[in-house]
Amino acid sequence: MEYDKQLQRIKNSSGFIAALDQSGGSTPKALENYGVTGADYSDDSAMFDLVHEMRARIITCDSFDNERVLGAILFEDTMDRKINSKPTANYLWEDKNIVPFLKVDKGLAEQMNGVQVMRPMPDLDVLLDKAKNYPVFGTKMRSVVYEPNVDGIELVVQQQFDVAKQILSKGLMPIVEPEVDINGAQKHECEVILKASILQNLDRLNDEQQVMLKLTLPEEAGFYQELIDHPKVLKVVALSGGYSRSDACAKLKQNPGMIASFSRAFTEGLSKQQSDEAFSATINNSIEEIYEASKV
Image (cartoon, rainbow, N blue to C red; front, side, top):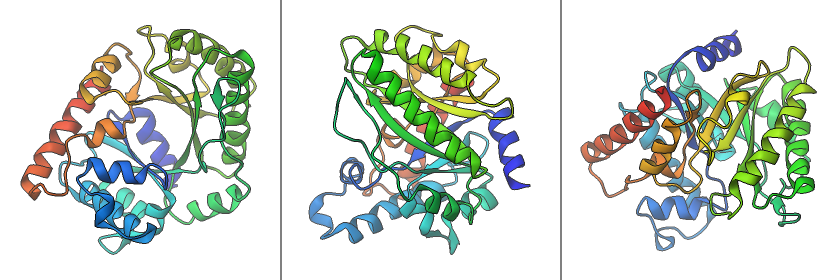
């Protein structure tokens, strides 16, 4: 089965997961960083065409190789499109041996109790069934923690695990992502509450259930080792969360067992205006730096 091959690849191979999943709200900023401004497109349709061009350029680049890149997280629009005449997820898995994931959340609710939970996902089953038509291995969904509010953080984690169980029931691997805002004055206090809540929810999973975790790089080196070693956790991946690539990689090296799943830090320095040679060299440097930090 493809799922079992993908499971073994994520579990046993070295590398990192590229986050190429900016959705409607974050796409303009991603394009702007790539040298494409709002003046270059007239509507959402044109905007998504341009961001798919960017992603296709990254994914088809020879530097984007399976020796260093384990997986890639896609937005639904990207999954629905093609690269080199193949659905994106098929191209990733069949041509590049890179494991596809799908972002499934619908964005964040308003901030309350020092957190933002996920908006309702009434059509999640339909989206998961659609993902099963492709060689998609797992999913990703994001909430955000700003303050060390126990009730708020427990609500975030409970929601994440409730949805994770729905995803597991469809035969897909959920990446649970309760991001801690890197600018919070009490970031470490948030992480202490978050880890305790995650451990409680992991212990409630069935023996045959596993999840992945995507976490902000912690203030205290090695702080998430207990989660990395937990039998119900397939892998702990790190988000860059607004850190520069060099800062994110430096922090990642202090946390052996975590691997990168960077978005902005991964595409940092890429530009539509670059020649193919310059683009390839830039992405190769990015991949090498992140790969080396993930190997520690």
